[in-house]
Length: 284
Image 1 (cartoon, rainbow, N blue to C red):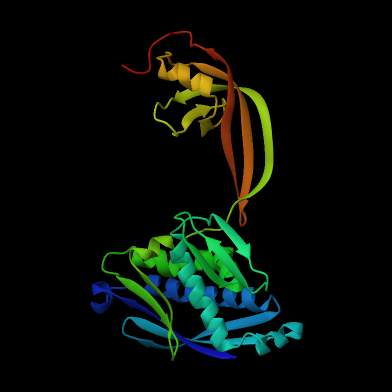
Image 2: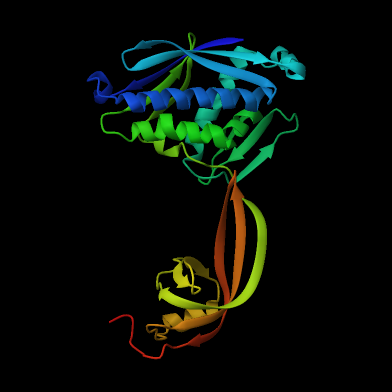
């Protein structure tokens, strides 16, 4: 299977020929990486893909993408031909824009296993090919679109980017929409532990739903406070001073998004509030 695709940028900077040569090269590499990763996500790891630059135009470049399928994956071409593969890519671009830079509220695979129902955080629902969802959640494709879509369109004078083949527009993003092309893969909980420990208050917060900043003696971090009784005391004027310590029951949850692991912390219960040696109010 051979695909001929063009990646075209529009805007005053492009018309004036002001795209940096290193940025143009980075975009070409990122676009090629995107197509290779998308092909492997759709046809399987046994699909080998190679992208070759075929020519240049004003504000665009054309790349020939040749995909060779080895082994059992070769039979997939009978069910997913070039046109359907491009439709999967088109749905992936639209799904990034539909999610608006946030992980989906939910994803439900439909009975046939080929399509999924995706709910975003604005109460909207869409149906896309399951391979489109896989492409959007893929770490390599996300890293690539962040370069040739989000980063490129963040420059002044860059208005939009477009992917086309000979028949249709496969993907399009405006400068505003480019902010949606980021990691939206749902987080996966790995560990969830509760421990009792002492935390130094670095920055108390008196606005609802804001995180306090603490130190455990080695690291500074932000954490939610779930103890409503303690928060009621804070609202009633409980005093805080430099060096104050909270003895707390702390929940530490590790989550994974792709290959990245992060920790989320929440204070479940404030067991004791120990004032610092010098009772200077932090707030005047």
